[in-house]
Length: 374
Image 1 (cartoon, rainbow, N blue to C red):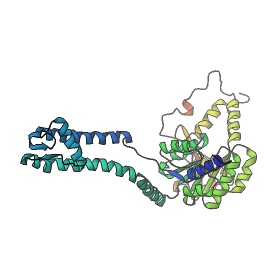
Image 2: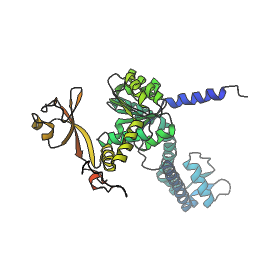
Image 3: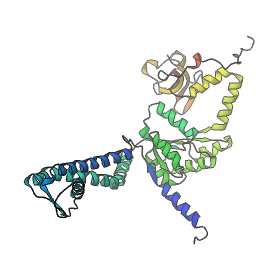
Image 4: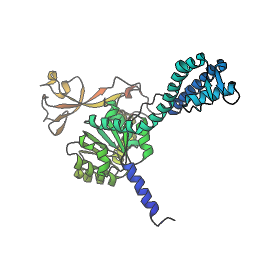
């Protein structure tokens, strides 16, 4: 008989167990069932080989029941011999049979035991190996990126940062859904199952050693709580968060986010731009997609560019980052470039097979915008 609230307590216990679950990507060379099947077939092959060897020299064996050894007796002897049971009802009596047992049956018995015991030990030590791997992973993890939420926004964020050269083993995904974490692990990322608003979950993701934290949750209130928790555990990490409503952006910045992206407003602005100018919308969409067509990147100023204006550089400069200020390329405050400046430029992405914006065709029925007075 279950007491009232017992199911809720059980579910809470399951959630607490899932909270501390960390999954690392695995490189499976062969399916486990196939590995076990191969070992079973090898063990059966040894058994058949031993039985045929005994039957080939059945005159050298004695059966206490009838004195003769037939094919069934040979399989019986091979079975009890390789499994080290050894009832003693069938024994080798000739010198040849005894030599065969010493140099053939005994090594086969050892190999048979190695196959069976090895399979058992592998299963028993799987958890130990996983714990050792997890401990080693924690000790070597430094300056990694944590992505909270593996939905559409989280996946796109990971694709963008990985397109810039970030290795997959430097990304940890945190999500309350175990199925979502399994999908992330299948993609080659480490995953932590649990509620990121709890400090225990973020600690499992080694948040105190992270360099960047991307918060892409489904709810704005969850994003605020995750930001507060992450900032409390790591004062120096760069935290970027996404919210649906623009009115919640100031709250996220007060909670410790370095940058806040309003997904609804950004999508709305892109929709409006695409209505006014489909070509401009295509270019902007291409800039957002990292690794193909045109990319917007940030790079330091090289020595050859010092003393020049932004327009005199080889790249298409959009803005200049000087100190904590972001200045437009035509801002009079920029003057000439300094060695400590950083440039935000638009460059052609060499890798990738997608068509660049200047090679795309406008959708059918859409005409290019005519300049005023044109």
